[in-house]
Image (cartoon, rainbow, N blue to C red; front, side, top):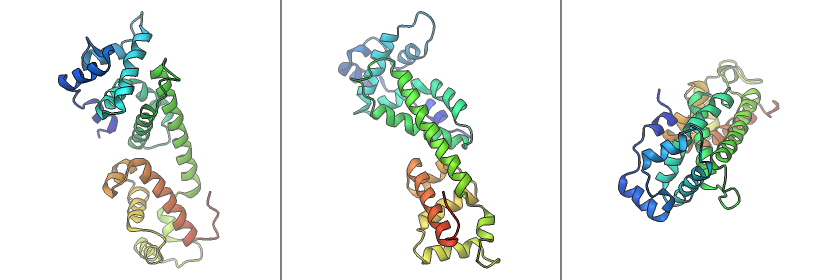
Amino acid sequence: MTNVLDALEAAPLPTRRRFARWAAQEPVLVGVDPTGLRQVLLDDTEPVDYDRRDDLLGALVRLSRTDEQAGTLLVVCLLPGLRTRLARHGWGLDRDEAAAIALAALCQRIWTYPLLRRPRKIAMNLLLDTTHDLITARDRELDYQANAHLTDRDIDRPADHPDDITPDVLWAGARSAGVLSDREIALIRSTRLDDLPIAQVAPLVGMSHEAARKARQRALHKLKAWWNPDQQIA
């Protein structure tokens, strides 16, 4: 299945007219086109003109503040490095979920990148910051799964409750008690019981990937605290 990074890499490049507008704002782009820009930024053949690379990357960072497609092009130029870091640090997460987390982190880092304070080694800085975000999200998710993972067994045989309880009865009880909303129930059922990637479920419930991940975590804590209040939840 094509994940968000594959789809992004296959996306159309900016039009010549759009790129010409960018070059009018950022003269460093004069003389190159989107394809040539990618070649310059991805070519590691010595000698590498790192200052020119940073000038080009800095132009894309500035343009991304007002044009989302400039940010997309910058992400595409950084995809090889992002994939390398995903392979090294994304273990323990669903492949698509790890890709979605890393992509969201990289986009956020681009939008908030402090060019005045860090004008050089832009690609390295962006990828290092994104890797930090990915590791933090991975460790948080793995710790959460170890301490508060909801399974069929949790639902069918919770402590101090009837042995014949079914998931539908549990959802109905949680809903009527005001513990969970329909959207929270959908998040839990889809990702924890049906094993669908949260990156796939999030748009179906009208949420971003990160918002859905946090909402699911809060919902599971509320459900377990309500259903089994004597159990310690990390």
